[in-house]
Image (tube, rainbow, N blue to C red; front, side, top):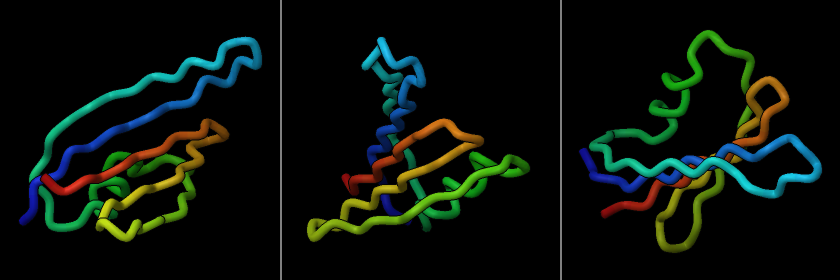
Length: 75
């Protein structure tokens, strides 16, 4: 298992509000993708997985029309 810092961003749908909710957590995981799947279990969701050169894993998520981003950085 690896330890990750997780940054979860939920983008605001209001056109006049550019703020977003940002949540931070530290977790121990085998697979970040499994973490995302469990978080949205039973909901209508699609995502794209991006892996950066430094090993950071980013999920660009559409959860019932709400845009979210989840970034996993190994610590």
